[in-house]
Amino acid sequence: KQDRRVEFIHHALTGIQEQLEAIGRGIEVFYGFPVEVYKELARTYTIANVYTNHDYEPYAVERDAEVAKTLSDRGIGLHTFKDQVIFEKDEVLTAAGSPYTVFTPYKRAWLKKLDRFYLQPYPVQRYVRSLAAPPDARCPALADLGFVPTNLSEVPVPTGMSGAQRLLED
Image 1 (cartoon, rainbow, N blue to C red):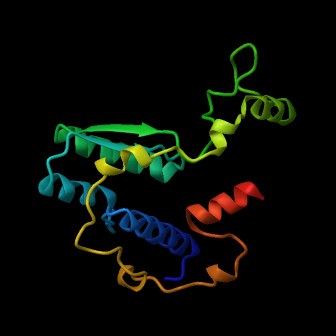
Image 2 (image 1 turned 45 degrees about the horizontal axis):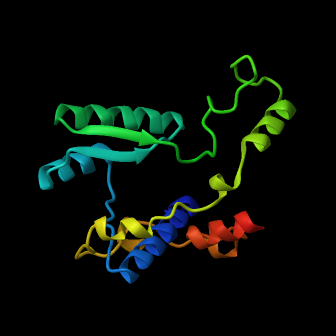
């Protein structure tokens, strides 16, 4: 029940919640098996489409396929986008259009393609009014999810968007 990964994500979510509440908006956080959570959301809300980010781990690929089928069975579209990477696997290719097989030429091509656009947060302020109003419920506490704090605060990896920005600047 001590899981730094869960605690890290929890810190990020509570940080996002605080930022959104400061501008009169909010998020609703769900904890459970993804397919069951989506089934409940589909019963509670009228949903036309779900927008989420790619996940590349084997479990996540399997999970997302199951979620996609569950949504599709209910007539709900699923659209996924880039998340954990700056460039997708097909965005940095050799001149012949194939993946690199040697790291150093790949690194050079990756750095050449990188520009400031990829290192700045997307300007979302103009869309704030389109975000949902704060939900009645707060983000569940770590203990409510069945977890206990770890030594995350002792690890030199800051959490949340501000922590990510500090790491990027460093």
